[in-house]
Image 1 (cartoon, rainbow, N blue to C red):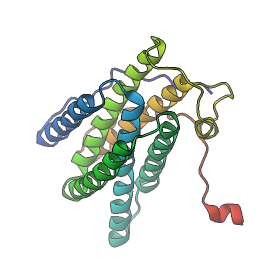
Image 2: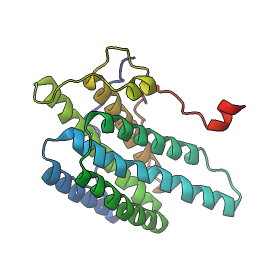
Image 3: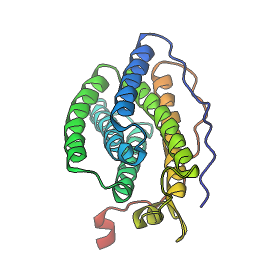
Length: 229
């Protein structure tokens, strides 16, 4: 399986207070990540993918409850956001196999997850448009980070270790797949989430919806009741 090409030039130019807040918040978190992790991209991925898996589940939950109250169709948003959360969780499970998190990093993961979950839940209730714009900008930064990670691998500063089994099963990678192959498909996933969330923010703001980057094919994680049926 070959990872789809990623357009690295995609950037939503902030317009209005909502976008400015979302962009500024994202840049603040990017500064914190750069300061804390420097070029330890594997460890950065472990912590940041924990955060990245939160927005999709929050958005799906709030939209689910909203549709129940309003007795209306969700236009496919709930499943899309749940798939995003699941996909980000698989990123986390993959990078845990590559970069074993330290006890301190595990503590950071637990702390950051609780703080970010409560913050994002509140933000989504106040302004779902701003919340989706935040995620769009998060994913823009993720594409940049994984591009830097690829450069580290290609230039020999990060070892191009074999891909974990979980990654080969999930993305259908060949038996001889390496970390570089994993980073390519993860980056393509992030580009897809970037465009989906900017699209949702645009739709909520009455703006045109741009093209969405293709998502790499991956295995569907079936619920246990289907296996038992």
